[in-house]
Every structure is written in C-alpha cells, then in structure tokens.
Image (cartoon, rainbow, N blue to C red; front, side, top):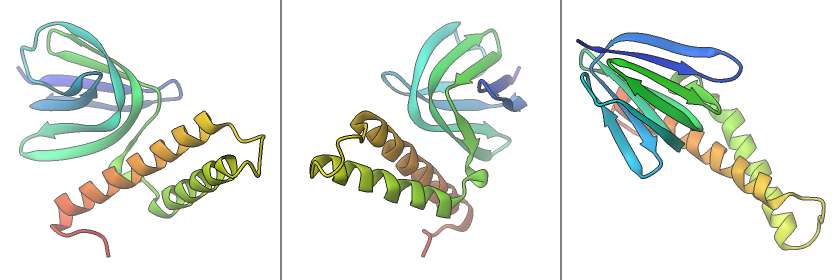
Length: 147
C-alpha cells in the first residue's frame, strides 16, 4: 500500500499526497527515506529539501526544520515553513540572500550593533536553501543549470 503524506505548517496545509512511493526528508542525522510499510517513527527535521516520489515523478519542497511522524502508511510532516520548489521566487530569494549577507557584513565590521547575527545567518541559510532547491528542480526538469 503506498504512502499518504501530509505536509503542514502553522499557517497552512501545504500538500496532501496519496499514492506516494517514497518520501526523502532531511532528518536530524542525514537524509531519511520513508517507504511503504516503514516502521513507526518520530524524528526532527533539519532545514533542507524534501522529495515526494510517485509513479516515477519527483516533487521537491523546501522545509526549514520541523518534525516527521510515520504511523502505518501515513506520514505527517510538521514543518516550521515549507514551499514547493516551483513556487520559489528566485529573484526574491536572491534579494533575501543579498540582504542577509549585507547584515552579516555590517555586523562583522561593527558598523551596525543592532544586527542580530543569528537571525541574519538563519535568513542567509533559508535563502541559500531556497535557491539550491529551485536550481536542483530546474536541473531535473530541463537537464541543465540556470544561466
């Protein structure tokens, strides 16, 4: 029996997929693959790419951490934040990367003591993750990187 996968954030149900052959998630200790008849499991997720495989097709999502529960053939992903790869606005992600890098630079130069370094680093990590997932999706669908 295939998997049913629910991807949920605090704001919305991002996706509910039935008939899933495999789910690959960024687990706390590395990539984790969930297949039908997987043992019951609860674990934390790290920021990374989540992939849903069904009928030879893959769909990628960004998850920025959270929890995963496997119970029977039902998987619930409670993500801090998530978006499908095709929803990623690359220009917006590039601008977020640039802003985060600028805040980090100002902090290191002590030009701005109000910069929260941890928040700036987290924002940079999120922007880079979104860009990486969007680029990997492009490579899978077109066979070549963005120019």
